[in-house]
Image 1: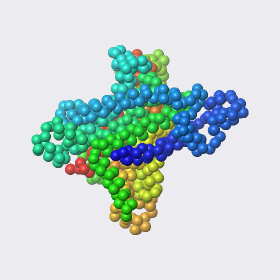
Image 2: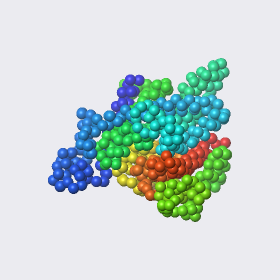
Image 3: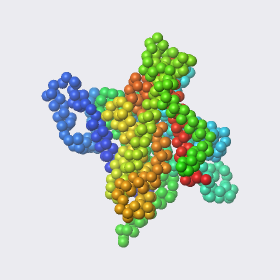
Image 4: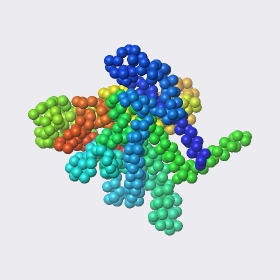
Length: 321
Length: 279
């Protein structure tokens, strides 16, 4: 198991390098001369040249990328903001907890509510609850999160006046953002849980469990849910990526000072080092979640674990031969 | 055309699917014939009629420039559906070609292509789209391009699986033996065989493309005002939400109805094409 995790972590390194290169290349294609953005529209050519020299913008793109990655790895330095002239790292780390909190709580509610309603739907298939959950789920999947967010602001902040619409002075400021972000994810989670549970329900081992007089509760939770877990975990991972992406929109609507809002503001100021660092951080978060999902597969499914063990044995045999 | 008839019969087995199919067709027709249905133009400003609540004259009210929101929703729908359809088809086609080619050749080539796709897929699609949109700049074409590029890796992955299974089948061997070119084998023999999953992918991704484009427009990175794209309309109505909520709610509901019917029809198409569910 430890070996599996170590191996999986190591495969993340080339992917992250690739992501940093991708982000680097995409943003370097942006129009506008960085030196002009930093020094101002009316700066003299000598000053522009000096700026380029200072920032290493005269070097080939690959060399710039290499230096960028080197600084991140050795010094944890994500570069200097073109707008403020200060280090990017501190600003981003300052914003990161907000985004992480919203995404984690969103993922938590998604998992609990989505899986919970999904189980009820599957166990009481075609009941009124199932039909209700299915329709709400379909609406949830079809509702763009910016529309959900605006509707919530309108109803709870502007008409009922029970929750604040923007800012972050306390826990109540996080309620609407989290509902917004969790609503559609919850719906996808529910749909996946339901169909996955229904697929397992027809299996022979469920009939066996019932035949030997197992309590219904145990049949559902131990035999059915455990075997339905793989697609459910996959969706948790996917939804987390969507939550991270959605943070951009939610933070914009509710003026939460997270990485997403920072990134949008930086795009408007054309402060690309800041954009680059925010993108990398969010992509890094997504990679970590995917890693956790892969580990979770092995934890819940002994078949996957044994597959890995087998491949190890096979390798040993090949080496011996 | 018995195949199509059979498909259609199975599609119509579910009542909700039929209702949503009709709803979607109606929306498409309304949007196509917007020129005849819309009571006003999408950019007809009338300063005297600003902020009017919905009434018989203005079905969805008017906005801060006195423009009729119902007309704007119709024209905006044309834009959203066009963008959604084109990007879904283009994404799936390019993705399928990449995935099929990569799987067909296999070996090192496949390995390299897949590792590159891994890198693309290590970023949530919407983040990738935002990065590309920020670089390309705003406007309908650039936004579509951003959504298409961000969507291709996933589609390539989906197309690759079935092709891996197909490439060792006898008909491919027969085609190779009869001296067909590689391009001909891929386009004439392999792609038609993975048509069912591709059609399902396209239908399901129309709605996600519409949402992505609307999301980018909402953030100010996509279609720009005064163009009546739905996401841009929601974004523009945001500041007037407290007093003139119809500026947000009307386009939002239009979007919800469209996406809802599209998703249900997409699910129906998937089930109707699924050989496992064939009776």
